[in-house]
Amino acid sequence: MTGKVIDIDQYRVTEEPFYAEVSGEIGLVEIAAKSHMSVMLKGPTGCGKTRFVQYMAHKLGRPLITVACHEDLTASDLVGRFLLRGEETVWVDGPLTLGVKNGARSEEHTSELQSH
Image (cartoon, rainbow, N blue to C red):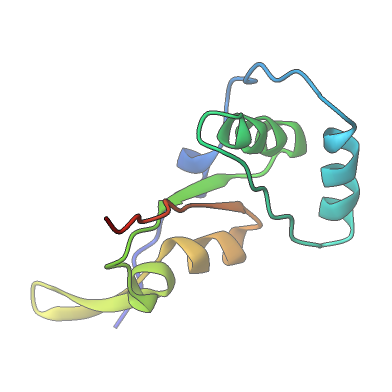
């Protein structure tokens, strides 16, 4: 039983995205990255969170794995699972496991569900 090998380079941001710093956030995230600390970004749709994360992944030279979170998302969607491949059972890393193994920045998109 062998795991699937994934090329982490496919998750690298190869072209520098445009980002205009607003209030020292680039320096703060650089310090957090050097200190192995997580950062949570919160703001309304369209305010630049994704662009900032893309910019920082490029600037720090780290892969960026994006996960679209939704109400049906399971732990195995994030961590990974065993899958059948022909006559073989193989482990396939989920996006969070892949990121941890390769020093990627993790970006989870959430959307607030409204009940009417």
